[in-house]
Image 1: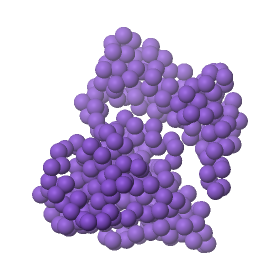
Image 2: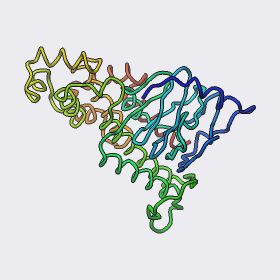
Image 3: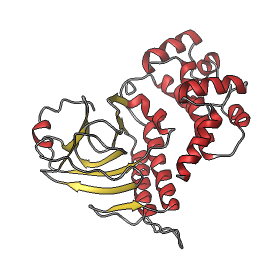
Image 4: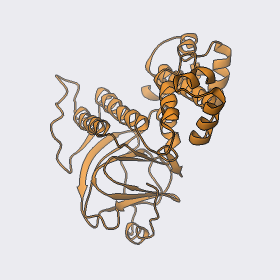
Length: 310
């Protein structure tokens, strides 16, 4: 999906003023079907994350020095704080896509990291039709839930019309919308052929899936290799060569991500979080967690609560 975008700079940068983006504290979602002439230019970037899911036609997104073309089945994510611009892909007649601006949950960064092209631009391609359908349905629920006032039953996910936009103002609407977007990120990350993954050996992809499905299990190089019918040495070599990190590094990353999610979503004591995430020693868990996230587990949870309360 990474491409050259020499043609885009002549169109997207032609606007004399920067296009605004939604305030960072809001969750905003919409569905567009744009024709020739559509372009957005933000020389200062955005204070929020932008998620785009293309359903038809094609777009071209640039952030910093990174560029990605988007076709049906592509999730392209732009992190905050980097100059970006996007428009119809040269030669495309239209660009139909879902989009969402929000503050990403902390755990999403780890799920997206393997698909970074550069400058906080992440590109994921979902090939399985069933997964694409679920992603589209999740965006539909996100649009419906963003409109909920907190009274009665949340609105149904009727077929959205192009041009619809919703802003989640209430706490319940915002959290429901973020849950749907989290489903999008999980589905896309699990089923994507992102950079460096499309040519991976199916056995290595299966081992990666085993780690992601149950990071707290007592996985070892030997046990994972046995599950995919490879010798330990061959498995470790292929895994590192094709995925860019060793099996045990991937396992540690998955366990820390799982722990962060438990801290965000539960009131489990830190010791229970450590055990549920596969760490036999709470002290070791606290040390590696702080190395990854910059604060100990308890402070990480407290910081999330304070931000949500503010």
